[in-house]
Image (tube, rainbow, N blue to C red; front, side, top):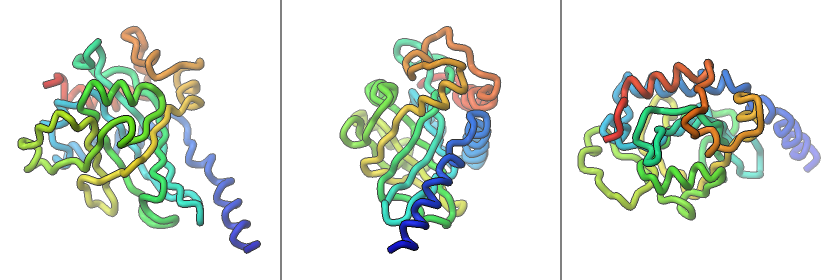
Amino acid sequence: MKRTWIAVLAILFTIPAFAQKADKRLADSTAVLKELISNDQIPTRLLNRARCVMVYPSVKKVAIGIGGTYGRGVLVCRTGTEMSGRWGAPVMYTLDTGSLGVQLGSTATDYVLLVLSKRGADKVLSGKLKLGAGASAVAGPSAAQASGFNDTNIDIVTYARTKGLFAGASLGEASMSSDDSINKELYGKDITPTEIMAPKTPVPPAAQPLVSELQRVSPKHV
């Protein structure tokens, strides 16, 4: 029992390593998105429908016996009242998938979530969201199946990549929250997700590659 608690405490003290600086998180998220787009693993048809995109790179289990799988990522939404304009400034988010995900020490999992509905985007931007309770989410279809995916009741489609394999994935009742401390680091002040989405909020230099990539591959909401 004593050894178990020592192991748990040791891992909990390593959690700050997951709270990486904003620029590293943005760079990692950009790398994941670029690779999946270049390999046509994210259906362009759905990306064009997305109001927002969330990327969580390298999500791993962070505790023994607690069942927590904790990730940190980035949300980028289209600008405008209906979120149909250009891609805007990013918001840092956390992801808690409960008992889902990979085991400690195994290969990390990259998650990509496409927020298709305005309703879903509003729920995400509230700062805290539990999938299933606040917004409906399903495993995303493959590129071949995307043309037939027209369910307007679905708010979010989710994908995961583990060991190089990319496919739709269920996130169950995963919770997502605004990562306020890193948002403060990135923007130099306390700021809410809704405030970040304001038209006049400039895109930070470290986020330009991510926003530019989204703008390049999906310049218009369709």
